Amino acid sequence: MIDPAEGGCVVSVRVVPGASQAGVVGRYGDEVRIRLTSPPEDGRANAEMCALVARLVGVRPALVEVVVGATSRSKRLFVPVPAGTVLDALRIGRSDADDR
Image (cartoon, rainbow, N blue to C red; front, side):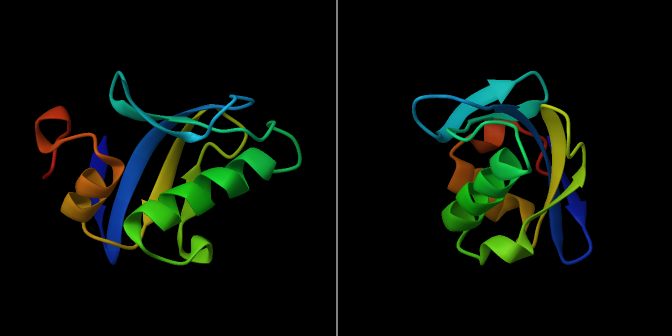
């Protein structure tokens, strides 16, 4: 779910575009499930997801990037903060994820 990386961590997410309200809603297998209000067109859902995660962890949206799965519902995001900070910010709980 969250893997350490140089300068931060990589988070596996599963997006649900076109939802009525955006937010982190828990887990989807080994991924963090995130609902987005934007449709999956022209990168709008990816931009909303990066902005949402950035706001929750306290960094600029430009620092959160999709590293795998730009056109897929399952994605891997680089987040420039430690894994523990991401776990706390996304409120998925340390018992829910591998915090290596």
